[in-house]
Image (cartoon, rainbow, N blue to C red; front, side, top):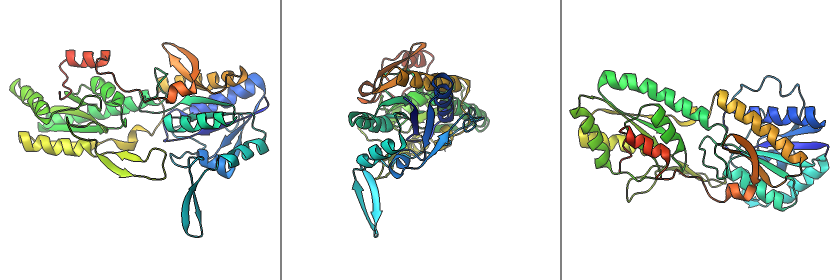
Length: 360
């Protein structure tokens, strides 16, 4: 093996640059390989846009958020949007990807991404590309790994927001609702809610009842607590109801965009309790900024482990954190189904023990 490629796909996430840096440095320092970085996710693979990654190119990027390579959560090469003569159609461009990799002499590919990107990586592996995946998502919803990088930083951002909301909620005697990301899993809401001292946490895995939320707020009022803090995962839904969809992006491999449940919950709380309620949607703040110390270390470990997996010929795998050890698992184990919060998870039990309601 002499030359490897690196790609960052899907939504941006704190720690992407740290992985790119670790892959590049370990490939050069340990094995003397050349490293090519493809630009703007899988779109760069189709359009053959890339840059050489040497030690100078990755210098000073450990602490930087986002990705120097660019990314996109669209442009699946197996269902790629082509515009010609004012017409749009989707085509399978995977053969073009294989040609580009062959023309550049790419021996193997490191794909850094979440479930969508790693699904594409697995399809490329089935077509003969030597692939190793790195689990990236702030949502922490990838199977076969205890943690994805970016999650810890996103939780810290949400926790900081909750700390700030506490002070204004207490001053004005308000109910404060914070909507956080997470898609169909409640990991961010659960962790941030516990760390930030929330009174109510609403997650997709536990459908909520508005009357139960209001009961918790009234219970606090009766004990002299004139404010309440509620954390809502974007995928949370009422019992018997549906998730709130903000919009549909047809050309994306994950077309559904969730969002808006926080406002709906806030409106209903104010209507049912008469208490002044304010809603904050944290949004993309959770995905931006520098990775914290934990994610910088985990990203670096993952990047080095991915390079070593290529050297060992462990293709079609994903690097994974199992307990305190970084190992590899088959890609198909990671993409089979999303990792949701078990309703009997120890963190759920801890939250309930300290008086946090899940609206059930």
